[in-house]
Image (cartoon, rainbow, N blue to C red):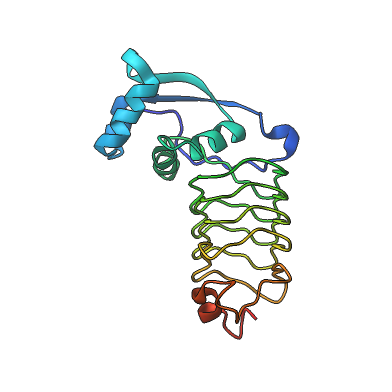
Length: 202
């Protein structure tokens, strides 16, 4: 069995983005956890003929690389939820200028993270916690924040288009949007944000 019995959460700062731990995982572990056929095939592609990973380096930056890789992002999201890989919390992380585009960050924690100038194009942050996160000047075009916690987040000067989804997102009086971003202007904002902006979150 894999040596990772509990999900590991690590506060991440800029200097700790490369801090590594070692991961060991076998094809048998994967199948025991109920991996789908595509997940099994992807694991085989990275594990090679041995069909196992032994003392493989794992760090916050490597996790980001997997989460933003087209072939790996769904596998790693499932593997972390299944406790086969340790998942990092990016609460308070210094992620300025990091490319997070086309990523799977569903239910990942970014509370109080500095994501200024990040490229989040076409990434999914469904049900993620971005409470108090700094997203100034970030590219949020085509990004999905459905069900995300954006209370106190600073999205001022961020790039937002009509494909950016805030359906069921949690916002409050401290959530900052770009000046031209109007909750009542359907040309600038998807209707669902205005629909879910209740008295509690205005």
